[in-house]
Image 1 (spheres, rainbow, N blue to C red):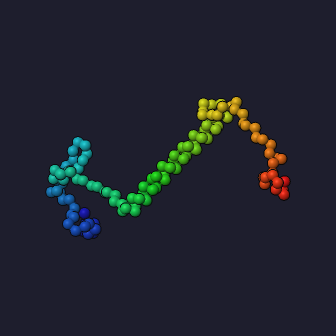
Image 2 (image 1 turned 135 degrees about the horizontal axis):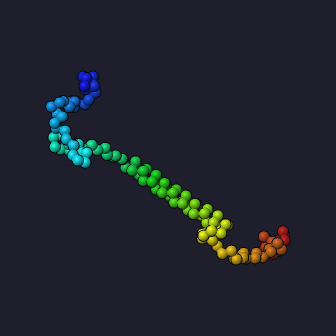
Image 3 (image 1 turned 60 degrees about the vertical axis):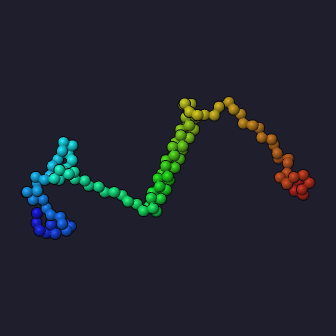
Amino acid sequence: MTDAQNAKWPDGVRSVSHDDIGALGVDQEGRLYWHGKPVVTRSRLNLSGWQTLAAIMVAVGIAIGGLGAGVLGWTAYNDWACKIGWVAVCPPRDVQRPVQPNNADISAYGAGHPAT
């Protein structure tokens, strides 16, 4: 390794020499060890309070959107399946609509109003 490459490393970090190779070890699972101690690398995500709140709000919004999409799909399927006779949650076909009275002779303003 060249000195130019080593210059980019943080203080106190050096390249592994031939003498140090014996300090490296690998177990049957493929885990790396240095001087018998496991080499652990972790990268933890730390969010501020506002970032956590925003992440929760985004997650809730996504869940509500997914639920809405599911309900829309179920409703569209049932509407279509009822029309073609497939198994679905359909209203009874023989139900008649109630007859609406003909209110053409009743004024919207009530009896005795000049518009009647």
